[in-house]
Image (cartoon, rainbow, N blue to C red; front, side, top):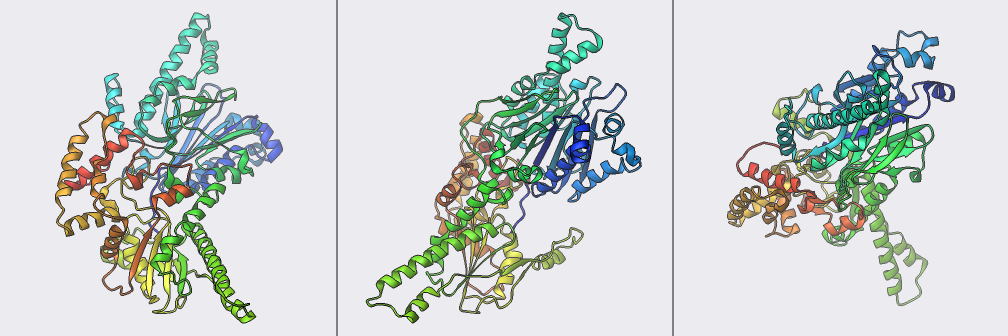
Length: 628
């Protein structure tokens, strides 16, 4: 219902054969380039504010370019960057364009390593300079570094201070730029270490350079740099001399999957991306483990190395509920289970009247949870039918059985996503009016004043779409009651690991709880939490606790739900409204292997998250709009 922004999607391909091999087998040396395009399109759900790609050619002579990069902003950035690449090839005669040797020597983006990135900003920073991949140049091929990632670091001030203490002078206070400079600095040191080793062995000139490029250990670069970062990440990089790597954070907050055969090594943020692009089975693909790095050397040797010890698993639950593609085998099952686990709560809310209840969903991301909800209600209804038959004190007639067995769960497509609000409409009233028409309804799909209408969404974050559009249009159907269902629990706390919800007042749950405190004369809790947060952030980061939890302690979920309805319900809506949220227990049962639930519980997986949650409340209390 409410589009959340998520940073980001990554894709990598390392070709293990000469370009001539792909030209002969697949009819084009652009095999890697084309597969990168497919992978990025399949990950378009993960980033629509910008895209970039890079390529390294391993067989160039001095004076020739060997690292290529294209970046663009906007929702059509993927099309633009690949269009720009192909424009560079438009004037090449067809007989030369199909010549892999010629392409390797003379054409841009004819290379051995490809890396792509899709961006969603969670920092509010925009402009082409913030679009990945980032590139650090040097006359030594081994010191060139191209970097991209799906990450957000929560201790960037500490890293900045460390780099400046080393004598560096970073130009930008940004986790992406600082990481580029930090890893680049360590890559320089690694190159210089091998240079010294080569000199001691008597290597000179080009032989010395070759020795360096053949002996770079990316694991040294990563182990001496990534230990300083607090956050969720999958960091990907390629060097000018031909090393490729991807590393996942020690708690597994952000996902990555890889595949290898004798032709390619590929990595992506989501498993179905690799399955579809390379026509693979689910079991062919491996997940990159927490703290682990996938490393490919210049000569194509592949290793998995444990750079940092794996910590307790805190893989992100919201990835499964909302962000990742629902076509993944396990995610599909989990989302169905989320819907099914809501059956009991919904039954209570509609007073167990399934005969006069219509079930539907908010398109499009809640559809799978909707199927699970229907499955739960069909199971419930089947049990009710068995009880009714068993309760008969005589052999039932055909009519009696027909009456019992004909009871059905009623499902309709009530809501349709109709238009996309265009950003050129800037004037407030015009935008608000248009926003109310983003969704449309199927008229007469509900019996007026008789049917309950249960409609499920994957999450309710800010509630703006509910207030501005959904509730208004559903009210036109005149149901007896509207029940809005969220397949995720109440979102109470900000995220600082890559999702665009970093402020306390982003959340309708938080706003409703503050109103409850005011209604009951308990504003002193707001003051106490503010003072406690100020004290807490002064502690050593490992000792910091989440003081914001005290805001919610006086109230039940049901009390907060009721207040949410009050603040979100438009004045002209007359239908009674209820809200049902997934329980924490229901979510954990449905998604047992991804226990990262800090959005719902406030139990942040790293010290940086705890600190920034307290800072976010301080900013709210002081009415400041900073992001953390």
